[in-house]
Image (cartoon, rainbow, N blue to C red; front, side, top):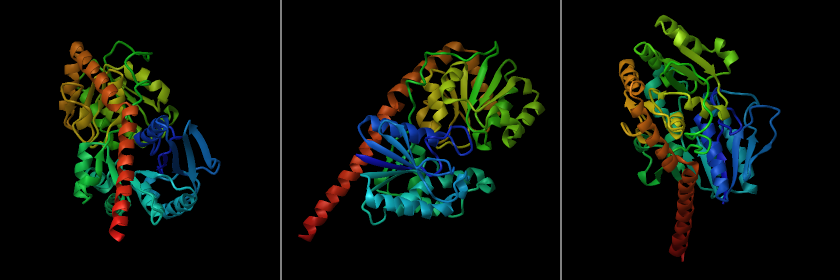
Length: 407
């Protein structure tokens, strides 16, 4: 089938770890490639943010990235893009009149807004994946939430207008129910991991003699890195490697990196905390394999791709018991859960793993098996395709019934 994906701020061409570039970029890129491997033609529509960007880029066999002119051709924070979604929708509609896809799959709420409006009156079914919900973001960030004021209302409407909504975890499905989105249209399909790239065997990054705790992700407060630094105070022999954020040369100007460094200095652990800055995707597995444990303890987490990547590498994980982590990490089997924002509890879990290598090896082996069996992109693409087919078959059945009623 011909599949059009809409990902207004998260381009497959962007490097994960930058501003507004993270798990969604990885998800859209990997899902598009995995669907193409199943014989589909996939086009990803993303907003043009550079005047030098070509209209179309061949990303992989069967996958094309198209840059949509919507607003100024420069980087714009995703929370400031809503005013340009009407233009995005208009350009989608013009394209779809000429070349309608079999299905449109929107990623994030603003992409959903553009896709639903662009498909209106064109008989193109829209499948929606939110990746993160405004209701959850506002609950945890309150006044720090920079989302446009109409986000929650628009999300709910997009979810009701879409032919189907794909939730990435059980917790998100509950949030969608609170939006009034019918449970019959909600399907749980998790994010995936490249199990060929992230695997137990392979090169290992260099390290010293200290036990190594690794955390990976963008440098934003909700990721809970201050909790990890506080926990390090109770682990006098361990080092903490913080991977992600801007390029290493730009860390000195990054507000969150500076805040975390001040915290580490105040707690007397600055000499045991290393900020790597952005790590290339190809180098990440080696860095993960160098760690004794990978930590992911955000306040809330729509899915948590870094935990899955660590699991796929066979490294034990400690995660906050929130959001997608509740589905992906089986407490005591493939990793350990910890309540968010409780440094003493995190320190206890880390100490348990760092002092018991056999436990870490057992958890890591079980985690690698779970990642391969449940989260390989080949399986995620097959489950996504099943949702597409259900939508298309349901519409065909409804048309037959409608024709029968008229006759």
